[in-house]
Length: 135
Image 1 (cartoon, rainbow, N blue to C red):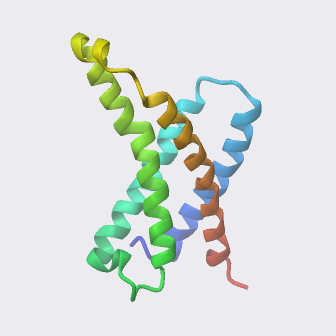
Image 2 (cartoon, rainbow, N blue to C red):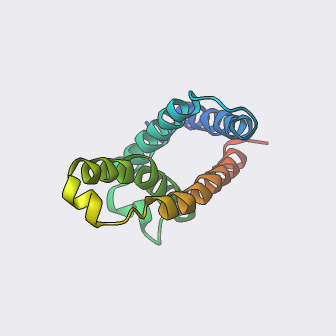
């Protein structure tokens, strides 16, 4: 079902909306952007897992004609999951352990800055819209 035209159209619409929202996010300071980003990431993660399940080991195989898109999706979604879900989880755990948090300097700020660049790369997913449009 992830390969069906209706689902791909839905993802295309989500990508377009996300691009608009990222533009608005740069101009409008609002606490709700945090939640919208997590909703968008959840949709992208669900799409990635669905495609991975559908294609299995051939997801990143050289013979797959969509290997470029799949590798790009894996890098963008994986980096976003790392930045938005995994690093904050480990930061929370490390802060809850007083001895751990006081003896180790935090590196999440530099990693967080690098991952913001990866979030911008997420806009490259808009190129997938070109694939979805039939002339």
